[in-house]
Length: 512
Image (cartoon, rainbow, N blue to C red):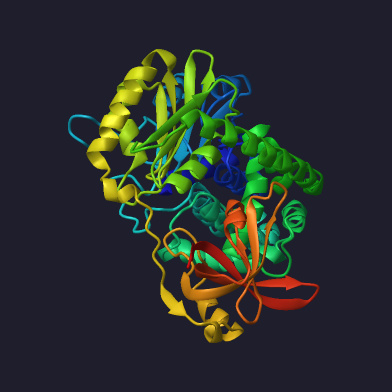
């Protein structure tokens, strides 16, 4: 970090052109906004490049480096990428451009001595380095950018210091809020420092003086308070939408441009289009998969699958079938794949490392990854992948097991109980909301809801609590009024026209 800060200060004071290279997801976009605004506020000459998912693929690429050379850029800083960009960084070095990597992805493991192999960059800031003693390893890319920004802003001692002092706290508050969004969007464990970042960032989010961000919140229907669920299901999908089916620059402009409100409205339209596209492609893939049987890893491909939504489809399949899922789209002579794994003991990126000789490139985390596979290697890839899955995944691991935290009766359900549960927030990866079991519940009104009738809405119990079951609309035909069922649910509230009511968010149910 010290070497990184010194080089950035040198570039700013020396009037060097600086290029920030981010990624097309919410984490990479938020990280890019943080570093761009930091360097610009310090008087640096800075611009940003975000890869287009279909034109460029993931992260740093030759096109950006060659453009940087033409523009006279002397320093490239990556955010949320770069740790596996060996060839690209060698190219930059040959062209006389220094590269600083800030990333949180796993470095490549050397095959023989089992150590980590790092690119030949000027400096690498990544808590997952073997020689890094920083205790919180599971930071997102935006948080690493936030830490770098904090040092640059707080230690500024030039003639800009006094002018900067007036807006420094506003910037740091905004960056903390963006880090909270990115931490949730990138499904980082909400433990330790991540938990505190999300806790404090969510408090700040409604107050941030960023018109584009506030417009995103308004479009998402989020007002006075923001929960981690609001971020995960309403805010981050909108930020992600442009990078999935269009250019990620739209989301960047929404967060970085003084006219961000206009870009936020465009994000809203893109998100609606993304939802429709996901539904269509998910149905197609399910038909293609056919009988799942005892497959340990689900694998499917298609010629016309949009690269921006294959990760969403893989995630839905992984959640539905409780096993790793890989969805690939044909692009020229290659397959571009996206992987998701819901299993605690299975590392999907480790699986790709074992097959790296068949891949052009790959990268990711324990639960999510991406890769490029030449079509000629498809058959061998699938064979070895299934062998790896059969060896590492036990039969009992893919049998969905629903664990509840405690059993309740109707008399237990109150705002007092909800208030106690809320003291455990923020909820997310590593800290899920408590699941309650209520047995022998009397069912009342039952109906399908949602644009495609995918969800289930019921009235339950003597007090006619509203119970919502997302994705379980198909059960409506099997349920009957005045019958009984056991429900596993999260206790929440619904606020409508100023009225607060308890609501049950049903995860699963069993007819009696």
